[in-house]
Amino acid sequence: MIMNKTEKFENERAERIATQSDDSFKKQSIDWAKTAMDKQYVYNFEWMGRPIIQFPQDIMAMQELIWKIQPDLIIETGIAHGGSLIFSASMLELIGKPAEVVGIDIDIREHNKLEIETHPMFKRIRLIEGSSTAPEVVQQVVALAKSKNNVMVILDSMHTHQHVLDELNAYAPLVSKGSYIVVLDTFIEDLPEGYFENRPWDVGNNPKTAVHQYLKSDQSFEIDHTYDDKLMITVAPDGFLKKTG
Image (cartoon, rainbow, N blue to C red; front, side, top):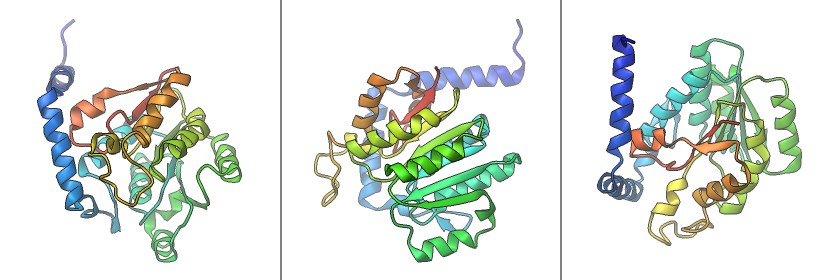
């Protein structure tokens, strides 16, 4: 069978991605990520006027995922300034079908809440204030998800092992087959021990350790290393989990 030019390009890209993730490149990427964190690089960017505390590479990956999945519900834990919510909502706006983003945070600061609620993309956003693992919050989200056909989840709140594991247990069952749950800040495991001073997470106690434990009990998800390998610079190594079963 003769491939057309698009198929040829996509095959060449897949082959290139599969071979670029060598140990030397990975080490350079981790070293770069540490330097970037030292310089608070992650705070430099905005999406449609709101701070989005992510590496630009991860924003690009999320754009690819949302366009590919075409979700009608995105569940996000952790809101901060709201940039990620605005980003997800703007992607859903571009897709054009009825869809919304649910943002959950234990403390939505009033000035951030005001900026989110007055943003043009707020028409696609629903805010829930409370712990993402609190039973009453989970129940609200489960009720919302029941009427949705294609659900995606992004975890970016408290980064301790137990909290992320509890979030995975609560929200992974809502993810549709073929969709993803993206666990951010798994790179904590790859940074020097004690790097996050005065934080409750560290090497051995972070989102990546929670992912690896969760996958032992849920065989319906697998790590999609395509994203680690294509990005190389990411806060989410081993964090792009595809629901295959």
